[in-house]
Image (cartoon, rainbow over all chains, first blue to last red; front, side):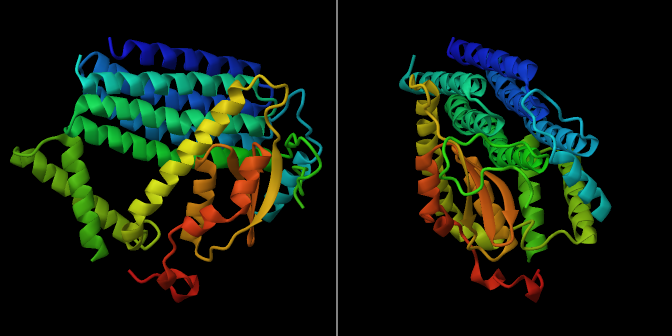
Length: 106
Length: 111
Length: 167
């Protein structure tokens, strides 16, 4: 009963983050929302571990915290490489040049 | 219901509340960079309060150590991820919304 | 010295995560994995004062407490701004601040501390300057006082990176 309020609040948070991921408008907003989603999933797993009295689940939360970080970094690298950042309020006149210069250097 | 349970319930509920408010800010704020601040509140205070509440339930045990390890990892990794995202957005030329002309650098373009 | 301490920390971490204390086979396997990790870390030459900063440990408790206080205060400020009913509760700005730290470790700690406190996010490090996005005029002003920069633990013995890493 202690955990019910926290579980519900985390689920609401997940829903709101999902709405932001769907709305965008830039790809970075979506990645930030996914990052928040992952962090809250770690907390959700930890609360569920105590709710169901299965403390082994804490190991999974620990691993998920690391995997979430790596996945966000990987997504960010992918977006930076592929130049598929686009959206209504995104001003991409500066982006092309920067990436062209960076690729030339490396 | 002991006093420890009450304290733990308070921490968990407050943490959940902070998380919901932070996610609400993620929806409300006008541009990407300011949304990062709202996401930051849920990354730090919300995680701290919820893990503290769970730690009060766990007592002095292996589970409490695991919770502390989770909190440590979250605290170390979340600013790195936030900075990587904000830096990538800046590199790609996404302009930050600024309220007035007092800031000395209001363009996202590389000098 | 550093290697020994690193092995002990890893072993303690393994024991606390697994919870096996009295099964000789499992503890032996854990010891083996710890030794393999230490061997690989030595072979990759990544075990230095940056990846395992024991020289910071005396200053760490005070820094953690300071960071905890800052995180709580700025969290409350950001939450107040999110819930504010005014039309424009935030005044975002991009600011360039001086970066007083000379070592890489000090710079990383400072940039991470800035990002960790909600209300300010590090955008970029440029030479001796740090470019920061702040949510409001107040958070930018509090950062510009340099109070947080002064709180970063930086060990003078490592102030000159050209000396090489004493292991």
